[in-house]
Image 1: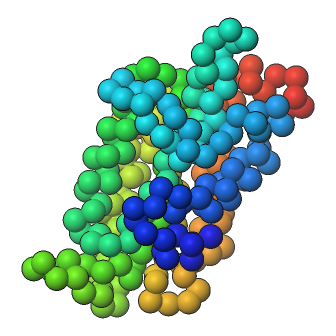
Image 2: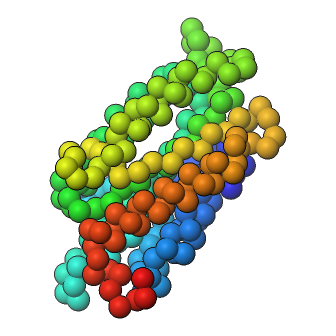
Image 3: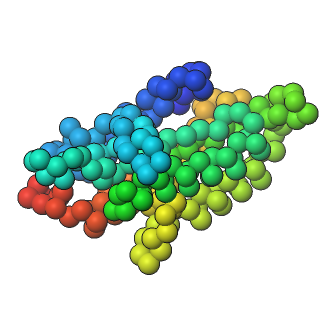
Length: 213
């Protein structure tokens, strides 16, 4: 799953497909089967400024003759190059994309998934070099602190730009296996998905009605 991500061009829109497939499978295990056909990768969702393709989304009709409505959206991102210059932009982009969709669909549940590479080349004086040891730890710590501050959209804090939950996968492309702390990361991922589906159940209980959920 992660090998495909790091060996795919950053310009390839499908570089996150394997991660999206994994998340889709784990979400289906938590959702009623009648919702499965509406959980898809690369879903087009209108926003206040413009339409945007979300990496994974549950877009379910509001009624037989009504347009589809996004109920659950996931944004998948990675930092695989120049972390010191990338992480502030990632936070700004997150606030912007989430605010745009929340203005039209305030009830939507949003999750954010990001892969962080501790072996990501760092740009210094216009030249990229490999990091030494754990030198990226402080940079990623600031980024994760920013994510934690944004991932708390629950009553009474309903500000636009916040998300319900986030999941961080930390890798090191200088080592094998790639994934750091795999068991802890897997547990965090399951908790992340539990939180998202729990928020969806609270916000949209009719979606779960009569399905043994």
